[in-house]
Image (cartoon, rainbow, N blue to C red; front, side, top):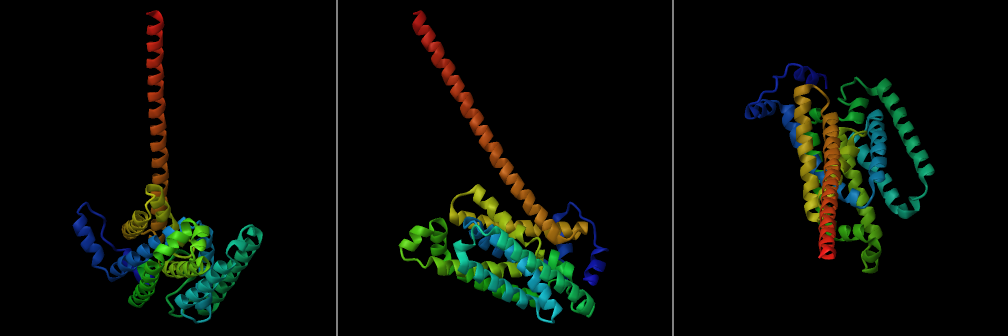
Length: 321
């Protein structure tokens, strides 16, 4: 991390020659790693995030990001590979949430209490890690867990992301049609014989893997933005599932690339730039949609007023004649 900060403090300025700027960025190994890892993670987050939004499971994504914070720091504190501890803990919690299903609704107080306890446990692990492990060459820190460090991703981590991400994509291809059916109308899907409960459990496990991998890039606190905002924008733009899934992945990819570039030239954390850009795209999409609706309504009202005036004139002429 210190090496990367030292490197980025002497980077060339941004110019209007985009081709030269791109060559300059790709000259650095850490930027090539960041763009490759960011591409894999953003596409994965866009694909999975579309179904998270479609199934109204945003709270599950937020809860798993809290669990990811505790899992990563627990592994770091006890000398376990943080990615392994992330996958194990988030996977276990995701399966538990999927198993309870509808029974979790209406239990906001209990769920909030459990999540508060999980975060408290994460703070304990952070304290243990800071006092016992940090500074011993692990390359890991509490800040990395919270806000990510996509510029510090190694080749080995890219390999793990690519392998796990490929499995998630294959699972989505296999579950795609039944998952979409179960998401849109679970009652009818169950009546048709689809194992809705099993599909839900499998999908929650895919969400857990995606959250665990994305935590490496944007951190546990910001993974929520990359997972949900591009998908939410895609669903605002189109109701077609196929187009929506592709658009969600494309938006996540573009936001990630632009966030990395902005972080490279400004010195701000890339994960924060990615999250802020995703939020900006969401605000623009919602604002543009509302403006469009207002203009349509205004035009319809104006046309209705014109028609009413014309009819009145006709009736007045008829009465006068």
